[in-house]
Amino acid sequence: MHVFHQVLRGSLERLIACLEGLDRELLNWRPPAPETNSLYVLATHTLANAEENVLGIACGQPVERDRDAEFLALGDTPEPLIRRARELLNRIEAGMGRLSTADLGAEREHARRGRISVREALLITARHAAEHVGQMELTRDLAKAAALR
Image 1 (cartoon, rainbow, N blue to C red):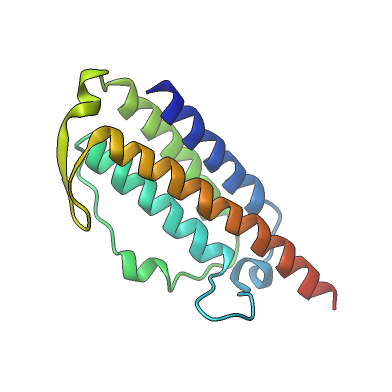
Image 2: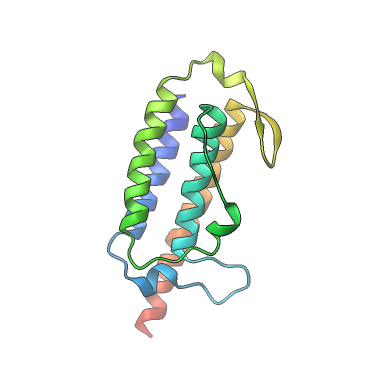
């Protein structure tokens, strides 16, 4: 499990770094293409997904999530997201610390995917977070370039 935790921690630390120092305009800017998302939306969604899959599915903790609302999120500062990411990192570390190697093969019910193993939930989460953080880094760079024009 150490590798799942390491990869997810790396992605969430990149997420935090991507948000630091940004103002409202940059946080909520969307690239001029269909179905793109702002940094605030991408961070909100990435954190909710990690919470749902790691803490909810893998660790069996109660998690409430409104996935549709994640894509409408707006914010004035990055601080609430950064605080949430840091708290989530601590909760994930504690939760995953209680999982055994045998737990990885256990199956759980996922709201959108049906029955999946804990291992699969962790793998999906690590991949999902890395993909969205890559999108965030690109979106941040594009937002900064657009602000310079």
